[in-house]
Length: 377
Image 1 (spheres, helix red, strand yellow):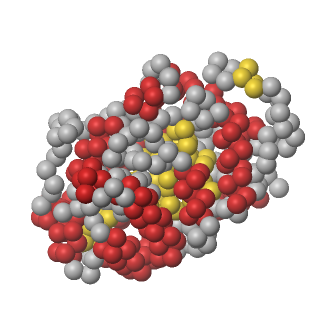
Image 2 (cartoon, one colour):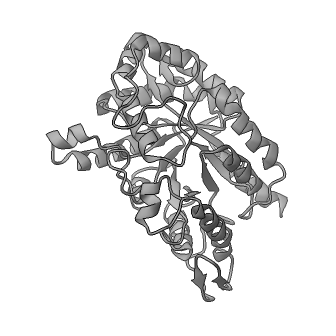
């Protein structure tokens, strides 16, 4: 199993009210933790593309943030989770150009995560009529982008949502044949669709490992028969949870209980209205009460989160490993915890926990691309 972090860029109201530079400080805090992740053994930093989602994520440009981080790191793969491929948001040719250019500048460390927008607030903000139509927009665009990376001239396209005359789309990718392709998956049918298209999947569903297990199983059952939208299959299931690692397990439970994790979860459920909510979820600005340290300990024992000393964290992660997750992604800055505490948690996790699960210095996506190239000669 591999590990990554999200640079989500959560900017809470309370900080902005107290400090006019709070947004800038949050941006730089995400940079700091992304650079640290590279140093302590995480393999991925994932950067979303979000628009208009106050407090939840002030991150509109993964290509901008990712380039800044790439210049300060050496090993970590920098991925978009996601770039919006709907033509009204990002023209497919512009995405093909930017992804290939980042592939060069990052020297093969870019991961092309894709999606169609996370909420009605985003979708309607770009003059798209319905959430449902974004499925058709996505399908049309994602099928064309890999064709633009092929040698020579792209033959053009006359579709429902975008039209383009024949053009040579430049540059061509640095990696052979192109960066790994991923897709955001929030509802059960998307996991099967991701597998059939040969794309890695980000699991953004809520729940304990056992409740996520059927979604991962649906993906794994179909990935072997994939007809990839790109030139190779990216067999990868990445799941998202919370992590706090501390030598003193009781201190870790306390830190997590005071981090505001349910405040952030409330924002997520408020804005991301295309992802099913858990039954009984409160309506924002109401949110679930923050957990007590005892509730944090119980949630870790169930594998819902990975909090405690290194042994506690490892035990929780094994539950995800057992259901077939290939990567766990944590969001170290989507909380009210100070930078020093976050850094200490990441460093301890990197030293004591990651080596128990990730023993291959090469990224899984790289291994799969290399294997596909070898198979085709």
